[in-house]
Length: 310
Image 1 (cartoon, rainbow, N blue to C red):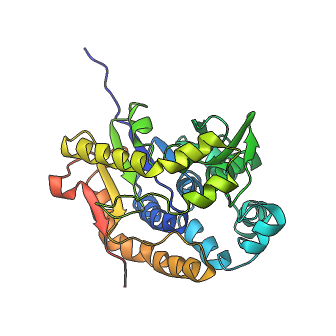
Image 2: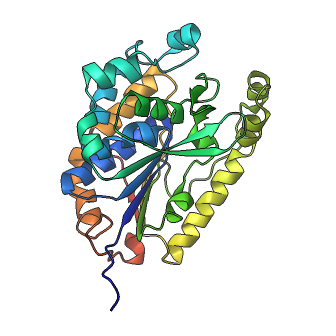
Image 3: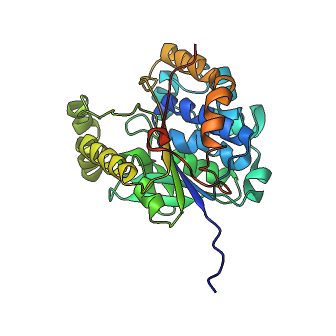
């Protein structure tokens, strides 16, 4: 007699700067609705904001970004000129998670969910997948590495590697997650359905600033091609029923680069949990992508494209 098999659920979180606050809102709704996963993988902002699903801190990512996004200690040109990092290591990855809006490392360590972050090896161009551990300062450094944008951050040295933003090597690691063997798989994107990335318009400048990193330059130059092929394969997997579901906003929000757009991003995302509780929760929690649910999506329901809240 065959042994009973307990289905497992895997979650993939795309990056995208402050577009990641859309992801934060979706995760808040799922946490409030009791949706759980066995394994999650986050890239860049998907790692920085998504780690709160393991510490079970609904609302935290949106809360601290609303509070500190316009604070020059958090991020800004001043930080970049002084330290080489747009986002302050001491404040954004130090004061905020350990004192001002504490990250619950004990809850993070207790939760059996495996949380993996993706980084890019500057020298080899390889994607580096690292499972976080006890939620300590070392784990925060891995999250910082995953979210360190080329040119806007210095490489983070960990495990004998020099690391930067994981989105350069593997923007949407859904195929990596599929290879882990999870029965039910969900991906949260930060661009709307049908989006396709164009060539990087700043490559001429990047070729000068990153001339000592040829593998990184090669990845940046063809990133749009790899990204679009990845989306095509994801869409094909959905059409064939080999993917459980994905969530994506119905409109694109620019990845914030100025204080004005940071504020606009957080104002938009701040309404997400309240608004999402009326729309996301019935679709995702009751219909079954979290562990312990049976997936019963109709073809039209496999993609959750949500309008911006008023």
